[in-house]
Amino acid sequence: MIIKLIKKQKGHEVIKEFTNNYGNKENLLKLYKETENPLYLVDLDNWETFKDNPDEILESMEIKIANKLILTDIELKILDLIKNEHPKSIRELARFLDKDIRIIHPKIKELEKQGLIELKDGVKNSKVPYLNYDKIEIAI
Image (cartoon, rainbow, N blue to C red; front, side, top):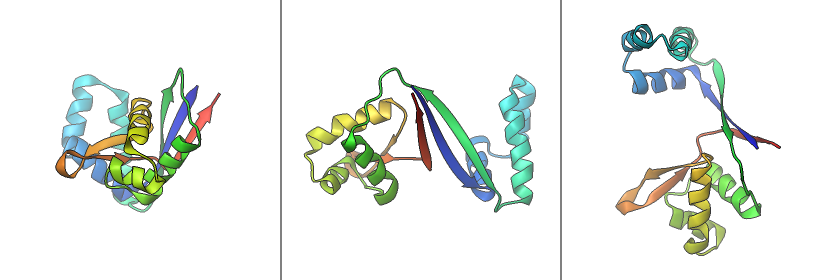
């Protein structure tokens, strides 16, 4: 199964992400010269473009390959709630779904393992489920 994770960002968001990742354009240029990695060159080009066009939208895609992916109604509801309700923890997500956390937690871990969601550190050792994509396409 091929999973396409699609994200749309405005130019100013892309610049902010580049700044977080590389510090500044000079550091990115140095990385490119040291490694000759063409992805750094693409980032340099995008940095220049979006510096002058901060409201332009960039659509990026990440492709994942999954040998076995099971998305039942509950997993789809979980993805939808994470994207639209932004739960502050897995426990809160379980409450949104009116399900026991022991049922939801393994499903969250599997979605994380498949790369569909991320878990970030929250308050008091909690994990915050996060979906960083605007669209998920699955090709069978």
